[in-house]
Image (cartoon, rainbow, N blue to C red; front, side, top):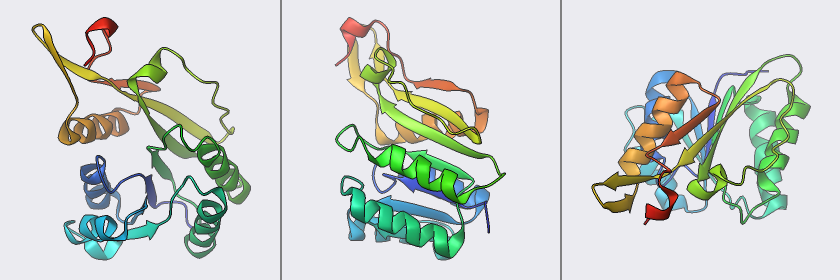
Length: 184
């Protein structure tokens, strides 16, 4: 069983640049997204499109999401790195993913970068983490420029996530979260 490819969940939008970076650095990247045409655009705009693989499934549909993961894991083994931008509208998706990887992986460690919105920084949920998972949180904040604030651009988000992956810290904030009252 292989344990080396990358899985990016929610990678056809704000994390597109992350997919390309990981494709150039690590090789095979599987990208989960809902929209087939956006997944094709990610693939076709990459330097190594033959190693960028789109999986069209809505992670909010646990049955289909689980089936897509099972198919992926049965064909290619489990990923060594997962970058997950799963929204709170799918509370079962991340636990399902973690359970399925843990079920398939015996001794290998794997890394999970869990991308979260800024409010999650202040109300951290108790995320259970399997023993062989190196869990990392990445919080998306905002930009404060003088007295004005704005949300992060797609490039700023991608660059921050790439930096978080490369630095491999337990917790990373992209942008700022303070002062909270100044957020856009």
